[in-house]
Length: 305
Image 1 (cartoon, helix red, strand yellow):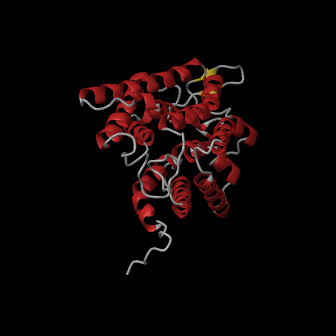
Image 2 (cartoon, one colour):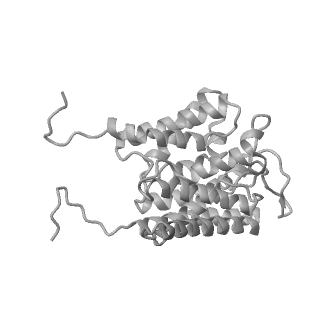
Image 3 (spheres, one colour):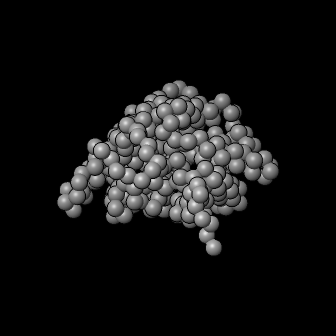
């Protein structure tokens, strides 16, 4: 017999089941990255996943804490971290990113549910600052079926000088990091998560709509902005993280709106062509305040004086 305060909501979901759904949703993008960038892309994903799981296990074992690797959250972090890296990225540098994501951002703050920001986002930013040259050494699929590891610009940079076919952007036949190329695969994963009620569509839709509207106002091509860079990956898989996103409907709308404004500000008026990672990190910091300001008043509760 359970004695708890109402409302009494019973559900058979668990962290492991939710993370398993996220992994399934990421599978189309994993397959797409392997097809586009070759075997090394899959090896990079394997390295980051193994490193994240190993660091979580070793840290918890060393600190004599319960070992949570069975909840699969470290696996998801490893996949998302790899999706923020180019296929040419050295494996040992990727392991450093895994250490930052799991040990520094996640475990030192108390583990899953206590981290202030998305671990993979912080890992990606640390790697971008520490190894900028390697992080921009993008591979590019060739028409002969191979991969050119000396490719130059990503679509976001290229579109400042020339237009790229939208179909090419949608299918991911261009240079970039593993998770920012095939928008079609990311959208399939997003549909799966919404259908399984793992995520709410409010944050992704608000985020993407805000970017589209601001792009139109700024004289940019909205579809190019939506299909380029890490926007789809960030909107669907990273901005919707349970721990680092608001839990109220109004909060989710504010969160998505803020993400879109910051992303466009960085893309259009800053030196960097990409702004998704920094937008998510900045909005993660404001989530406690957003939750507090948008918290619903209990039915029949007294108003604050």
